[in-house]
Image (cartoon, rainbow, N blue to C red; front, side, top):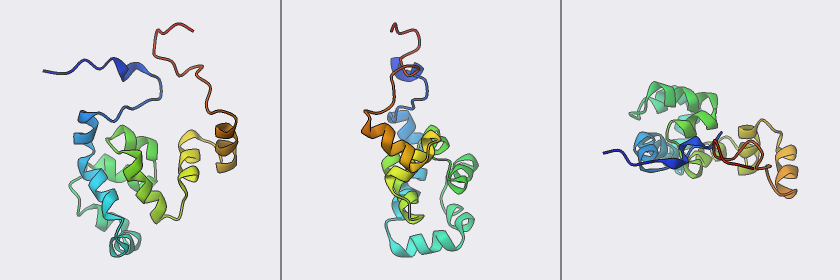
Length: 129
């Protein structure tokens, strides 16, 4: 029996629910492995070989190698786990978030300081203004 998910029609939004958690389990465990210096070194030395040690989908592995964090999220990645990839690359969370929005780090920071993204275009499909 599938649960009703009224939140699936919010443009540009992926909700990390139980289904996404299951889908991204190995992707997120890979990310957590990067908390250990020896694992970060192994990953940086040969990303593909390290990723192949994890039973992730090929699409998940490709998204990690491309650093396509939006795709990783769509494939079950949780941003708090994915932040470990950014840290491994020497990126701040702000730099990562900027890349996910198509903005520079400075543009992203300025948007957030001004109150964040406008709700326009981000409402639930069919929701009145």
